[in-house]
Length: 282
Image (cartoon, rainbow, N blue to C red):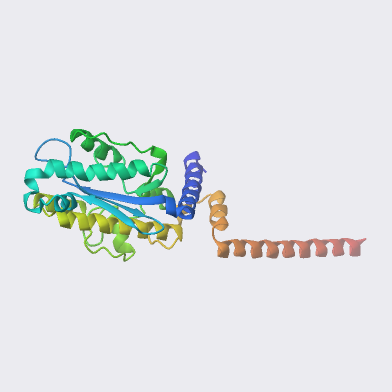
């Protein structure tokens, strides 16, 4: 067995332990997602504008959200969003970073929010651009659900394009598990909605996606999630992998136990027969 295979088994065990710990402390855990303009077709050449952010508590399902649309409604500027878009985005990010700082000791589960292109750092940078002072959440409080899926089920756990042709593994997992996805827009459609000024549509998509993340997490925890991973993807071929499987599967553990008893009985019978023949010979 290669060291990489053994390392993967250990990482998988750590990931499973992390999922269980998060579940046990669900009241202090949030799921987060946000939408923004296109990451690849930005007409201004600057950082991508954020349009909505949603945060849902893993235990209570209570959800907080901030969006350009909500900011505009609160300020009575629904009919003049484009003229006031910077101040509306700033107001949205004010609320988000205030919440983040207040809940700095909580865990935040996300989907691929890991760099300045799309992630916590991107939100921080955008707030700086709008003259804000962002609170920076410690990395040990961030859990990337997409990476945990790779650790647990291998790199082939889901295709990058869903059966319905939607891009992204998130949509693939949604379709494979028949998870409700009403209002959830793939990245390209979110970018298109931004171009058309459909900010309410973007907000609804973001809210749906934190619900989806919660659903996926629950399925990972109770091991009911459907993926394309086969036995080899998840466990490898080394005996250590078999033991790891047995430790987490009552049926397999029972079969191994019964097999051990059977082997012991057979060996005892052989020893008895050998001893009997030996005594008879003497």
